[in-house]
Length: 442
Image (tube, rainbow, N blue to C red):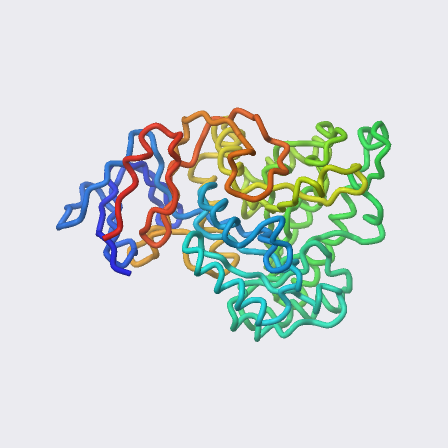
């Protein structure tokens, strides 16, 4: 599709991959790719688009951990509603986990996800294939076939890969294809029957708790197996301080280990728990010391990415007793504002570091295009209004789900616009000045 060439003028461009952090222009060509980045770029027939003062222009954000539920659980979310939620949250791409129904353990499922994402014409979708058939932890999937069908990683997310030999073989195979094994790190016998973190709050509420070692034991194992095989392992939704120590140790030894953390794990703690199933997630909300360790890891570079673990559920499924409710919360439409408010505006992270966690690092880990505004790259762009105050309103989400503990929170920092392949796919009409960014396609 041919588009109108445009020049984004006067924005604060933050592109860690190029070392850019300043007011420069970005030219997008008729093919929807970045043509040039620099000061005072000539128009040469392109349409000028004035970026409002204070807005930040970034490489498109990538959420490397979402659950879009389709096929099989469309009452929770569809690929179409999922990508609509993604672009509203500032994400130009998302990697969707395989715990669908049927599980994405076969090329037919992968191809259907790719097709439906293309039909939606919003965010890019990168499928994650299953490690084992049916995510049952027994027989390994046809990893090469999944890769050729479009999968960029493998995971049994929702289920840990408990069998060490299966994990070893999976790591050996992915080392041939340049993609990671993404593991939900959890020692099953320690986690059995547990719904929250083990501690005073769990006892006070009468809920069964698991210690942080439930996670860190498995992280230690996976780091060791990565070192043994050379295969890349990625720790999903890390929550425990001991897990971070294991990751740091692996990195210091040159092992191919990376990790992500979610906003709810770097903001909330088990002290926030109540009989509200929107606070039930897996891994559970940990102790304040674990939360503080996640903040430290984000700041010092030990943590590689922020991901949402967007886990939509129907309201009826969450409106039951705490023990019976499913784990998980949604996050696509809250993550960026939470990150700006709690990390950037509280001087935990610089804007450059935040962009690094959301753009180039996820692209590198998954081996996908994106994460930079270098000339020739796809014009996937996230435009932020860091000083705009917003109120989280779950009833206005584009997701089909409403299961968030952040409903009603007032935050400083908003997504102004999202651009995919040079095409504006989302404008936040509540942000003053954002409407000026809605350039037309030719």
